[in-house]
Length: 232
Image (cartoon, rainbow, N blue to C red; front, side, top):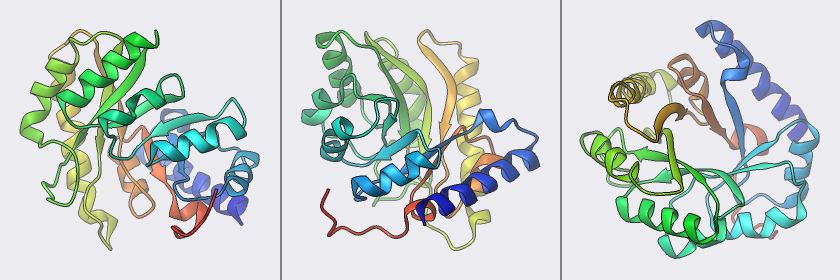
């Protein structure tokens, strides 16, 4: 079932790119595999998935050594500073940087492990109290400060807009994130590229692509509903 689901999502990504006049190669489809057992990830891999997203450091630690080496792991969940060291050299991108203190820890651990780490700044674009991320108004300041740190590179923004029944309801938020990235890019800050926008999930990834997403995080549409009782 995972293979069929992945193929269907891939078709929808292609269609959204076509509608937006974008190349399919401009968008990375991340299979969000949180709580899913290794055999399901293997099915997705066999179907062509190479980018996988996890919410918890422990799941990356458990899955990383038993799955193919060419998988690109993305840390997409809230990250505690004391867990940063475990991600060094294991992930291609940390999407969820929402404070200078976290950026400083990622920088310190990157220096210690002699690696470079790409990060995104997480923006709580709708100002929801239940969500992590910084406010739109605080974003530019955080980007400017984090960009000064060694061995980390700011590649763009991440957004988690509200859960909605109609994906059109989030189009405005996606547009705001895109506009914010353009504003930041115009400042031509050293060590900041704004080439990545991580936004859009199962319920709204097509709208996100139409509004400029370069990374979409799709879990349920590929793997089905989450099962928190699953063991790895």
